Length: 243
Image (cartoon, rainbow, N blue to C red):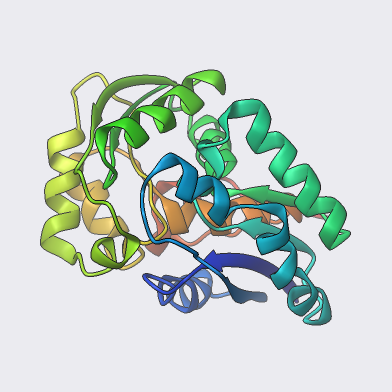
């Protein structure tokens, strides 16, 4: 059994995680702890405070007691808003606090894009344009070219959590460009786990979404690969054969 730990801010789309655990169909356990969201706002200062070291550290002990092998800060904007170097410092502090490998959703997107060979991506963000722009800057710092960027102007995670299939598909379609190797939908407050195969069929290319890449990133930290077609192209890479 491989136990994965996640620090998730507030309550919006956390039900994606038990769904993903079920779709993995393997000896993977997903443990999620809610952190204090503070002010629910896609604004730079609020997002910086959301991912402050003391807020993340508060949930770590519960995950450690659960026996997890790695921990991921399950918030895209609460990572990239610190910039490339600042986000590295954030996960280093989390790893020290947890005493285990750590990462964040933001880095998960960069690593997942490289995993599927997506050098050029289109981004469909729920965020206001200025916050969406910071995500694009983060991706570029990680060596991923952004061909198109669409923001949606939503300020709160609570509102994002109310979006359903129609809104998610519309966002992905509006963001996509012919020259994009993949479409990225950041924001862990957005429900996407149930829609991945349909999204990829509709667009004809891989789709990376926040909660999907968050779990994949935790698996990467534990040197696990799981073939789970229900979670999209990212989870159909050749699994590592462990001797």
